[in-house]
Each structure stands twice: as C-alpha cells, then as structure tokens.
Image 1 (cartoon, rainbow, N blue to C red):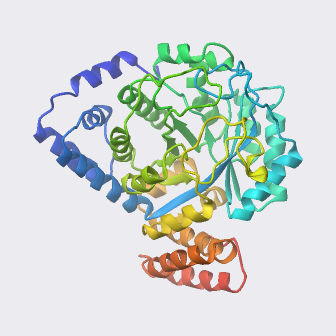
Image 2: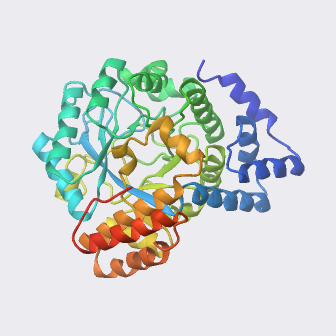
Image 3: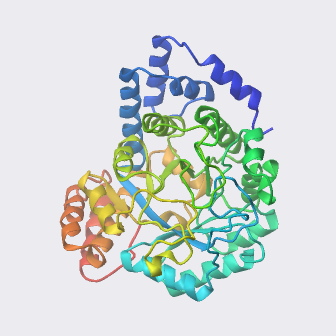
Length: 454
C-alpha cells in the first residue's frame, strides 16, 4: 500500500498538544539536515507559536543554502494543447468547459514558442499538455521535444504529462527528457474521486502508481506535488511525504522535485469556491517544513503566487521558480492574455525583472542544466547531494549560466545586479581547483564562449 489514509489520520491526531521539549528535539534534529519522519513533520505542521515558527524558518533557510547554496533555478512552462478529455472541476481545460478557446500547437508553433522564450533568456522548459490522446498522443509529445532540441537553444526539456504505461515511459526516456512531473492533486481518495468525475484521470490508483512505472522504465528524476486547496493541507502534506518515503524505500531514490501549487481561479472551472483554503501564513510554514522533512528535494513555486510571497519564500526553502509564465498554448509568441488559459497567474513580471529581483536579494538566478547532461540524476544525484558534494558545483554552474544570461539577455539595469552577484560569489568556492576553473570559464565567456558547465 502506497498511501494509508488511516495511518495519516492517526498521525495527525496524535501530533497535537505536544510539549515544547519534544518540539525542540525535533527542531534540533531538523537542523542537522537529515530529514524528518512523518510523525515529526505532522507535529511541526501543528506548531502555532511565533517563536518556534521563526526557528522553523531559520532552519529551512540554512538547510537549503547548506545543500544547494544560494542558487534559484528558473524555468518556464510551455503548453502544447489545452484540449482534454478529463473533467476536473477546478481546471479551465476540463472537457465540459465550452467557454475555452481550444488549441493544439503544430510542431512549427512549438518551435516558435521555444524561440520566443529563448529570446528572453530561458534555457529550461516544462512541456505541459492536457490529456487528449488524439490531439496530443505520445508521438506528438516526443516529436515536440526533438524539434525543440534541434531548433532552439533550450538545453533541457522537462515534462508534465498524464500517466502512461511503462512501455510509453521507455519511449519518453529515449527522448532525453529531464524530469517527469505528475501531481496526485489530492491523496484523499474520496475527495479525489469527487473532483475528477470523468475521464482517465478519475482512476485514482492508476495515477498514484505512475511513479512506479516511470522508475521501472528508467526515468529516475521525478516531480511530485499536490494542489493545495482541494483537501486539508496537513493530510495532503503527510500523504505526499508518505509517497516520497515509499519511493525512497523501494527505489533508493525519492522525488527530485516537489511542487507546491495552490488552487487558483480558472476560466470556466466548475468549482466556484475553494473548499480548503490555505492562508499565506500557513503556506509559508508549510514550505519551510517540507524543506526540513525532505532537505535534498527541490521545491518548486509557480507564478500562481504573488510577487511578494514568491520573494519571501526564497528564504524558506524554495529552490526553483517558474518565471513570466503563460498557461495558454501559443501564449509566448502572441504575448497576450486570452480565454485559453488553464488558470490565472499572479506574478506577471518579465524574466528580466525576476532575474533582477532574485539578484537583489543575494541569490543566484540559475539556468543550469548540467546534471541532466552529464548523467547526475536519480540515485547518483542524491548520493552526491547527501555527501555534500553538490553545493560548490551548483553555485559554480549557477554563476556560469548567470554570466551567460547577463552577457546575452539582461537589460542594463539588471546587469548591474547580476554582475554584482557574480563578483561577490565567484570568489567563495570551497574547492580551490574548482575556484580556479570557474574564474577561467567566466573569462572564456567574456571572450565569447557559451554553454560552459561542470
């Protein structure tokens, strides 16, 4: 059994009214960066006093920087089609939404979208498609990946696509994808079935077992997540981490990333009111606790959240951000809003503005794709991270990609911020040999070389 609902309920019930002494012990354990049990995580989710919440925040920031340094990875979603045969109540793409303008991009249009993103400086894409095996079969997705690699300077394409059989995952692996993403939405089965009344997605168990099929097909970089607002956030968080524990135990490798989307209004969605809203304060605490619970996992935040909150969450464990996102097929080349979006976004800043904002806070905007390209994935990646060997590599690669971005894409105002970060942080690499090589490669970039990485 992957998810044991009764066990989750029992854990949540037993984690209330815990002594301050026990909470202190859990926080002391968390500060060592070795992760937390489900029971310990549940106790922290119930912490309400400001003093301990502040401790949680401080530990989350320290752990993230100890493991990955100050880099924040940036990417953009690219929607292939908004046609879908599911009827998810909360989604603008649902089959019964007659208000939505439906569109499936041709391969040529996909290339145009990738090039439009490339012009802004993006190097990492997340391909997203509604579930429609006629409009967007696997062969179409694979053809799209191949076309992007051959016709743009996109260096890694990740995929957010519907669950598939093992044989199809083998084909997807051969297409050289980065991470495969699939969110359970909610792990509470009754709530899941209510919100997914018809279509292939209504099969809770088939979706739940998708990570097993991907792993067995050789895809070892997996992205998981839940859609906060569909059910009680504490239940879904413990269930998500239970799923991660299951993968770690069975395959020696948990999720590469965990995404934390909150339910947002969507054009034509049937759901009129969020049943389980989560406040900004609860969400901030949640992000920090997930960083404590699974310290080596990347935490992704989308443009669903406001600019202010996204900036605040950089200090609480977030390590990847989408930027200047369109949730509509064709939205980048057209550069305008229309009624074909999956949901409404909140942070509307350009990529250049996001890069400047991150740099101004002392973090390194990163467009790095090195680990995928040299084979540091899955269990191999996690071994290096847990041994403390990725921080200097992550920082060095982040600085190299930021240097390239500064030279080729940044506005004059943004260049002042990014160059200051490069100057400040490029002289603090712990490994002397790596330090010398980093400086040499930064000079090579000044002389016109590109795409340098460790």
